Image (cartoon, rainbow, N blue to C red; front, side, top):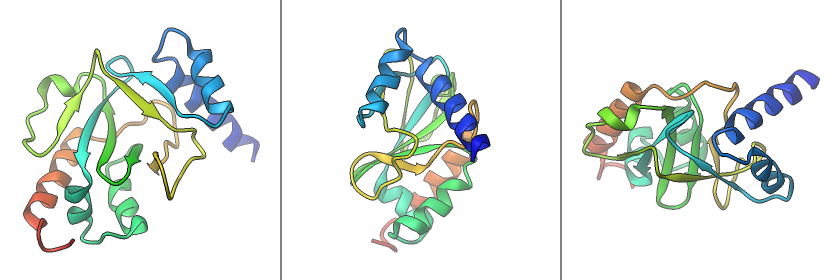
Length: 156
């Protein structure tokens, strides 16, 4: 248990350090609110439509989708019912070319739930971070979105 607490503390500190006042993020999380964090320093985000992610997972169930998303290698936030926010390395947005989702970076902010907020309702972690600095592989994200596009219409 203490190892997980230390890991969660390291993850929370890393996430919060993306803004000028990291303590405000910690206060928000302590009060049960999501924090608003800056993109482009520690990570960018691929904003993916839920319909494509669910089609790629070949199932609409939350657990099946989480298994598919876990293959990306990093954390994913779900803002149901429309968007998945896939955390990718900073700089990804500059070269992002997938027509199926947009990549967001500098000048954009992300609503980030507490680390223990894993659903099922409201904004939550579809795949919680397990280590600070561990992010999704952009190539795997693009591949997942392409697969979802190919399967779209087969699974609703």
